[in-house]
Figure 1 (tube, rainbow, N blue to C red):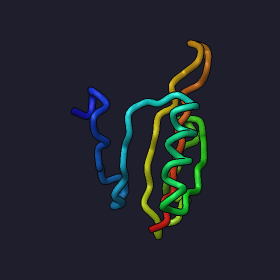
Figure 2: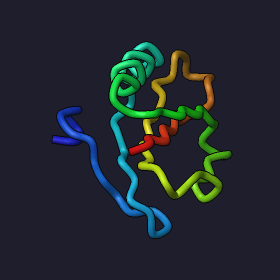
Figure 3: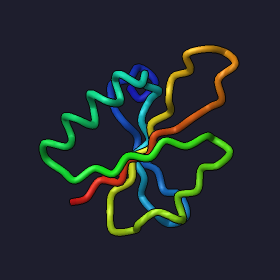
Length: 86
């Protein structure tokens, strides 16, 4: 179901529960953030794959990682991190 983009997956990284999503386009991520923002305080951060460091983020919020779909084969891998205030 995760691979078919039906569900997100919860994983534990460095003793922290993280929601891992399927790859999304920038437009899909923007719409998703707008929808979540109606209900939660969202702090999005986009970073390159090799600079990903979740340890520096607040532990007081839920964390969701969304891989960004590449627009060209030369683009670096990027992730959008969402800190979701509950």
